[in-house]
Image (cartoon, rainbow, N blue to C red):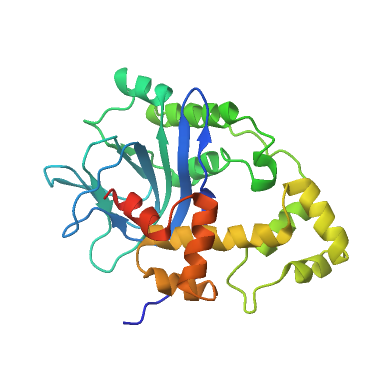
Length: 287
């Protein structure tokens, strides 16, 4: 069977947990061309954490434990709760775009205890997915700034935006912090995996007007690791996005991202995340 690759799919915001005493953001990402999880005839999904999915484009349904279906459309957020069976997704051949987070910990348990997060009301209709997407996307700093931002600050920002969503009250957006433009351009080019051929770190150095050695040293000083490692991480991020999307087999993902074979891909994936691609997909499905 031939699968059509969706070249607009975006990679993750976050694929390593951000842990603090307040709570943990386990995963976060943007998924374009997705179909959801836990929709019939597939079994319902059960996770050990909270999740929410902001629908950016498209429409579908939220499936509850009693198989009741609630329509979802652009601007809606579907929450799920730890150990509560659920599903959400599109119907037929339709696809949607979504921004999603997985989270857990004391501050979120308190929000549930006080009724701010309510399992009886899993759907929240924001009416403006673009504004909330911008707010939520900015919570996770770019990779080259992430190590400099304390985890409790990132989690606190997430709690603040989540509270505003649930209270139907948005505060004014803060302006972006200035940063070195060449680093952003380099990260964008290194993470652009849809070009053929994919630009190498040496190609990126030339486009930035630097020798490769100068570029490598400056990039490592700013980001914390080499351009080659950054690009490998981008390939693994794309792989995780495709695993979450659920339309390709693992060997097809390995071939699409130009790993020499499935074994090399699985080893690289596990080295970064501590879990194999198959285990990662099973976790997403709640199995």
